[in-house]
Image (cartoon, rainbow, N blue to C red; front, top):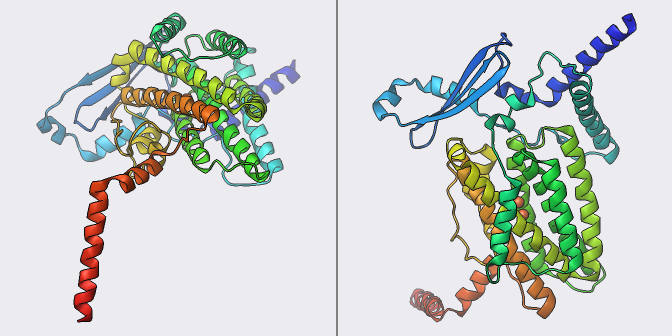
Length: 426
Ligand SMILES: [Fe+2]
Ligand SMILES: [Fe+2]
């Protein structure tokens, strides 16, 4: 008996210790000492000066949460001390401010990185087993429904996603053409996703984004291989795929900021499916680049349907929440070269979407996915008829070289320079 008690205490202590080591951002949703009844108000000011508040109330085991937003005048705002507003913002940001928290900290030997990762993920596994199977919780344990992302209560109806897909495919020219095998694999994948992530849209998006960038790694790897063999250098194509991967990486980081990878079993599944998918696509690309692009076009179109449905279902709630820092830095940074580079159907600098709320963030992601669909369709044309796919930056240079007006300006500038040089000589 003593042994059981001691082992249990040791297990709880170990889980607690690891938990605080791997989840430094847990302070986000603070608990009061009273576990039975507590109330929290989280407020922040958006850029337009509107005060937004998340109110959480727990009474006799039931959690209530509401989101409030109200306009306040400049006068009343000036009464709020700047320091208070700052403290409030720091404390209330409801997201993981460090999406890299499960990563290593520097390049290292594979053995060391793997060991560190094994300890981090292993302790999270212990925690999940202790909670789910044995009902043991540590002192700092916070139930998933009280943390991001479940605390927001986002919804996503599998039926509505299927309906959005049916509608899109019924529109002329919007159905992605695919062979029977690709379509079959796609349908199985969608069914598994619906089953595993029912009522957990952010975890579903995290899983999708984890595997969604694998094809771009795969295409770049295969293009490197072609180069290494001396067969073909697809310079522009490789550049576009790199920009696409960078875009998908940021979708992934946004989902991590929202807590999409909080559960160990989701991470386990996501990482392993991603590796299998990567190697499968390498094989497919080796035999048919067109088929590899075609399958990805199917998935990207599905992503548009899924994000579009999510936006419709959660619009009001999303508009009251701030964007994660990683989203703001990606969509509004000074250097948007790579952001422009994957959108082969758009001119450089023509798409500068807002990023003021979480609604903007998801809308941007949805539009990014639509751009990926177009790029994948263009890549299939390239693979079929050799119609070159170039980055928008190269397209802009070529267009400006061909523009007679611009050529005239260049000519005049060159002539002026020459004239000045002649005058100086005299
Ligand atoms: Fe994505
Ligand atoms: Fe995507």
